[in-house]
Image 1 (cartoon, rainbow, N blue to C red):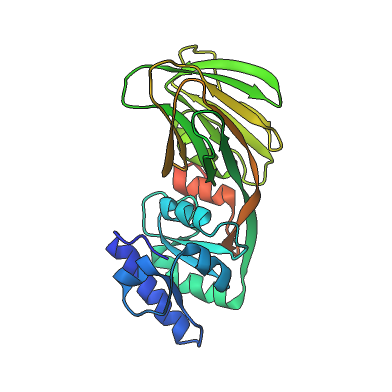
Image 2 (cartoon, rainbow, N blue to C red):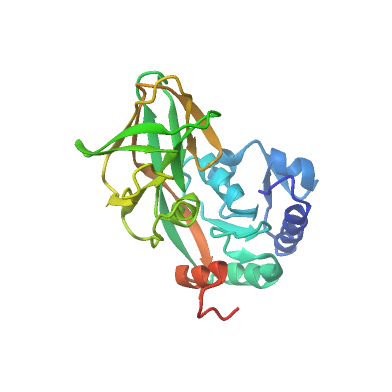
Length: 281
């Protein structure tokens, strides 16, 4: 699978497809990828089908492409490895210049897999039957109007606070290095069993991120009258909400499996991507 609007990603995909075909492996592509990559392999209709049929999912692009695939495979256990053709790429383990070396490691089994739990969002009144799923985060933000919104938050049935702010981010450990980090949230190790609630530009300056158990049930009620608000999963899929709507956010029973190269680590990724002291590159 590839980001179809990035020629560099398509070029890398073609190179990897040829590498695997030369070793006798069947290459599968989703329909959208096949339209830009040509006859690299067998075409399947969508990500969900690929997740069921493939032994390994190679995703060429940036974090946004990984997030789209993670939701699209609908809980399939097939491991995903990302090849970075984007900018920062926290979820893409392989850099473009390392492709040959990485494919050799994968072929030889010098890899490990970790499981990342998804977040489920269910909507109450006003958005009947709506449901979102995210790997990184769920955000509730104002619409086009430049005014604060008010959100009432309860955790496991206990009142937390009412945020008056530009919005709220509920982040998984995987998403702690995404929008949550930009909004002042904490960096959380992917294996930590927590969720982070981070207000966006809160009116009360003492409002800060709150860490809750991964098993917590978070209920957000929209209180602002006459203002459109938007709930978004991973910055990609959105639903409009209005005053009185409630969102229930909790860990999903589904997860994705991310494949990593032998010798890589989350802390190494932090040092390299954030250019921290101690980085060797």
